[in-house]
Length: 265
Image (cartoon, rainbow, N blue to C red):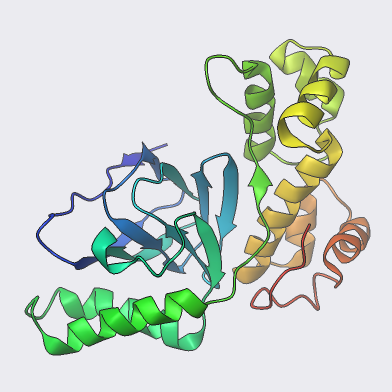
């Protein structure tokens, strides 16, 4: 898949914005900024990895990344990116940990307006300065979103077979591929991998894969994909997929509103 470079940011400003289009499949390799970042796609779905967590981010959500947070991005669909970069001296009131928050109408309009306005007007424009300040105030009060997917340790001391299996599931989370098949593909026994899942991720394989499936499903619903298409892509019959979805998230896929806060998975 094609790769993209993160933007270079000057140190003599307080804030900057970014407006870019990325095709489906584009990847931005792990990197960090000396600035804090609001990572937002006004259209499309992103798979964002930060620390030992993966976040699937539809347009109803955005990611807060404090300065220095190492992250990578995979475009799960065509993405219209509208990001804010905020100098560390202006965000002391915001979290020092990465987070996912819900986008209300005001915050969405602020981010998109800033990104579009900034490239056509002077940097010292009073309107732009005010918009940035209001956006930072809104960020402090935006509700958080709890759906996250734990990832294995990738240090030299870790067992790379677990990471290889997790990557295979992320690439294809269908239940048509069994745990035994995944284990054979990475050259480990089912017992060894089951132990690694519990030790490294705190949950078993079936539950972890279900979290990946739910994240992909919620993003598909946010894009307007038919429930039957989502179900089949994950290896389910529509009825069994709906049962699983309702059991985990408390609503059927057809009744689920991705703009509402999810309960913990």
